[in-house]
Length: 153
Image (cartoon, rainbow, N blue to C red; front, side, top):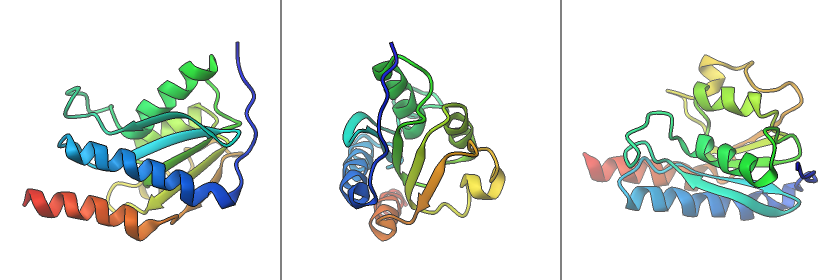
């Protein structure tokens, strides 16, 4: 059975990005690259995830992939056209492909990723109806990643 979810308002972006940042910090605490993601429908978080590539020894276990899978399971269907994905870092091309296939209603990301972001490698991969908002809490999102790598060097 598939659920229908309403669109999220822009006023909620900071609140849900903070939740995604909590996930990113949890990833860092586990030695994972700190990227966090949440999927929201009708103003409610239905999935939350962070990178698990090291934990699962799986290069596809990015935060977005984990969140999409959990949200689809929760909804009982593969399409997330009535949902918003909040992610702390601009998705890579792989994740953008999955976002496109899920027909996500809205993508909200924090920091841009000029080295691996989808806008460089696959700018047209998202579903044409997906609304995109970038730069929400960009400085805070970027600082979590920068601090992680600073500590590793």
